[in-house]
Image (cartoon, rainbow, N blue to C red; front, side):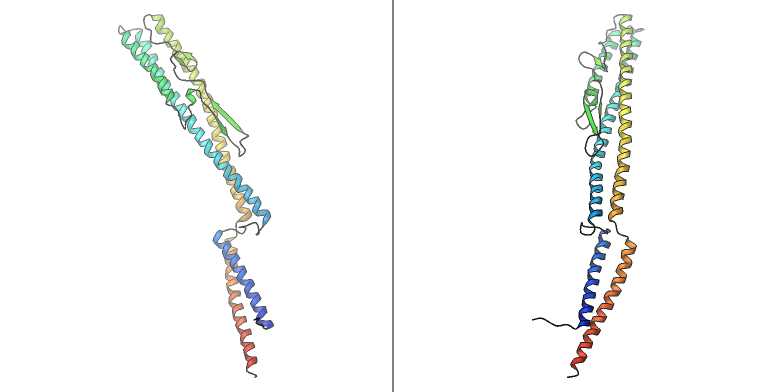
Amino acid sequence: MSITLTAGMRSNLTALQTTNDLMELTQNRLSTGKEVNTALDDPVNFFKAKDHSDRASDLEAKKDGMAESIKTIEAADTGIEAIYDLLDQMESLASAAKTSDNTGDLQDQYDKLMTQISTLALDSKYGGNNLMNGDTISVEFDESGDHTLNVGTKNLSATTAGIVAGATLHGGNFDTQESMSSAITEIDAAVSNLRTEAQKLASSLSTISIREDFTESMINTLETGADDLTLADMNEEGANMLMLQTRQQLGTSSLSMSSEAAQSVLQLF
């Protein structure tokens, strides 16, 4: 059964329905803080903002990878610094042996320190990678993985052959002054090589840190750009809500008055 409304009532009802729809839209904007919540609101801005947000998310993942790479490099650098200390002790032992009658004990201490260099290098790993032990890592800077930096060093550990950073360290052989001087020369070569590798790591670390800061700034730019395309003006939406509430009250009053006008006609009969 259809109900016939007067022209005034239908007009007021339509206006009230429109006001309610606008209130629902405004309420959604106030609750989400966004003017564009779906592609239906604004297809162009919605998909532009989504592209910015998606890229920001991809770069965030790359930034995490950079942070892990920095820690891997720092672990290797920590190992190098510790090996410096061990080599310094070994050089002190070789120097002391030149003027000591107890070369056997000094020679034994020297060999133990060289063994510690090897174990220390093997322990300088982070996240399954050990730059001290010949591993190489590839650091990705962009979202597609096309822009990378490979970081690696020589095998810096003391192997069974006594290789430290490309320099051969023979076991403690303090039988002659010449052998003691030779040990000191070998240590100096190892230290020099370590410094070269440390400089390479420092350069890579600086590059990654710069790219990490750049990536953070780019993420902020992308997120700000996405917000500019979609965020609502909360002051404006709040004012709209107040106006719509007033309009709703007026519409309800007008609808009531139209109803009363229709009822007054009945009184004529």
